[in-house]
Image 1 (cartoon, rainbow, N blue to C red):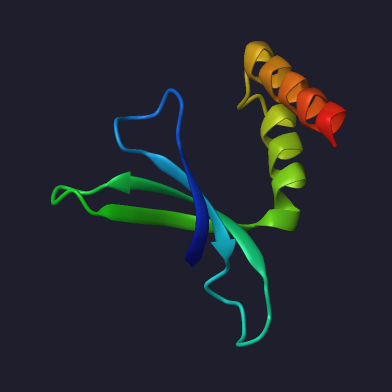
Image 2: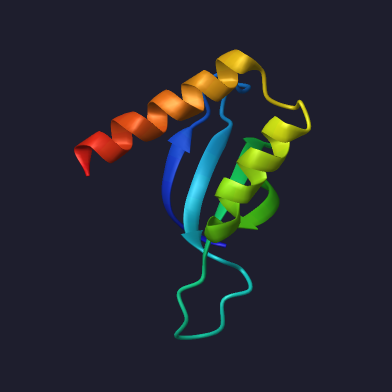
Length: 89
């Protein structure tokens, strides 16, 4: 992945980040976008976990909610965050 923007993860370990950018599978000239979670390794460099296509994020959130992996308070936070973002659009 070629990260374009990063943000710290609230509630994550110190140094954990979310990254958005050009996907590692993107062919030259294409702009496939993905989301990645990163954390500092033992040397302080950012290790990168799995990469998720941006278009799959809504499905991943719904899947996690249906399977009971998200608490009601987490689902409320997601809903409120989306409403706030959409209200500014």
